[in-house]
Every structure is written in C-alpha cells, then in structure tokens.
Length: 276
Ligand code: PXL
Image 1 (cartoon, protein in one colour):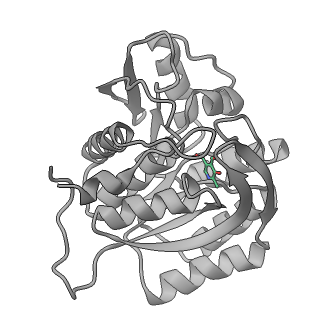
Image 2: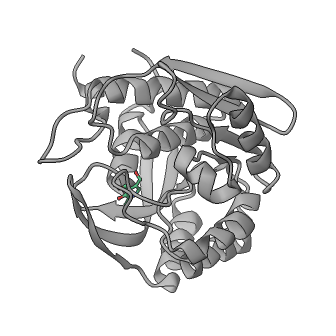
C-alpha cells in the first residue's frame, strides 16, 4: 500500500512539528503523532505542551509545560531544522494557547497548520481548561489551515449537536466562521450511521470522505493519527481534499490494525506499516 513518497536513506526527509501532550500509555498525543509522521516517512519534531499521567483506563492527571518552554521548543525547531507543516493536539491551557499563537505569528510561519482541538480524552477526562475554549477559538483557529474536531468538540466549540448531514454542514460552516481556511467535521462518533463520514468545508464547497465504521473499542489516538497524517500530506504539498483523503485512508488502516492493551481501550496502530 502506498501513501507518501519516501526520502532516500541518508537524505533529509520533510519535517512536521507536533505541538501536543505526552501520553504515558503511548497510545495518543505526541507518541501517536510521531509514529504516524515517522511511518509515513517524514521527520517528526516535537513541542511538548503537557505531560499526562495516564494508562488505558484513563487520564489520572496532567502537568503543564511552562509557556516559555513550549514557545522555546517551537522557535528552536523552526529556526534550525525548518518545518513544512505543523499540527497541534492537546494545548492544555489558555496561557499555552496564547504562547503558541504568539510564537507562530512572531515567526511569521506560512506552512500549513492542522489544529486538532483536543478538549477531552475518550473517557471524558478534560485535557483543556474550559476557560481556554475562547482562546482556542480566537487565537488558534484564525491561524489554522485546517481544524479537525470530533462531534464532542464541535458541541463545545460551536454549540451544535451534529445528528445528521444538515447539522454536520451547519457545524462546518460555524467552525469555518471562526477563521480557519478549512474545517473538517469528523463523523466518526455519529453512532446512528453505519459509515464514518467526515465533512470538509472551505467556505464554499463541501467534500465528503466516507469509510466503513470499524467495530473496535481500540481506537485511542485515532483523531491524533488522522490529523498527523493530514499534516504529513500537506508537508508534501498535497491539496487539502487529497491530504484529507490520504489521512482517512491511513487512519482506516491504523484502525484495522488496532490492538488490545491494558485493561481499557487499546490504540490505533501505525505499526501495520511494518508488516508487509
Ligand atoms: O486523543 C486525544 C489526546 C491527545 N493528546 C493526549 C491525550 C489524548 C487522549 O487521551 O492523552 C496527550
């Protein structure tokens, strides 16, 4: 199965920066992002925002990285290594969000930025202070090339219950009004449907991405994996609909390869890539 072109051994691959939290269980967050970016053949750089204490049963607590250290990681990577795309995941707090936005603007970065607006874990444990939702909307969304909320995040961000195609479209429009170039409303959690249909919107046209819903309880890190794969495709210069199609194809394979782990939900797995 082919995904993205690979750099020949010994040559510098394209680079994607992930600005995200650490998952001690290794399923989601920067660990998932790095697996996907690396196994798609790109180099992953990291700005850690928070260290979560978690296993497959839930997030017990998290510790925020100081704002200046988050900003410093981004600056250090961008000014030396150079990046072709970035993605954000768990941003934890208003002050980290503001530091990321300030740094991004200060560096006058013009590479694609994929914003996965992580608000809570799959168990409902909060990963973003509720008071930080406004900062996410006002500071980060206008900088985003793409935002990729799931249906719970749509509800928190634009107060729309997505229950059918019409409300999914309304949500995409409301999200787009917050300033990103593109909005992707993931239908993966829309339990009434047998398919998983994601809806992409650029302010004018809607694009649908459809895949079968795979019956697995082991889908930890699925959102991170999709956003990281889209960022990888954008780093290669793909147009957005093609990048999302690649991301969807990638996460579908990762879902097929998901494995049980611990006593709770196992992770989606990019390791399928090593198996052929
Ligand atoms: O999958 C969302 C997510 C992102 N980042 C971190 C997480 C999670 C979910 O648990 O722990 C660090």
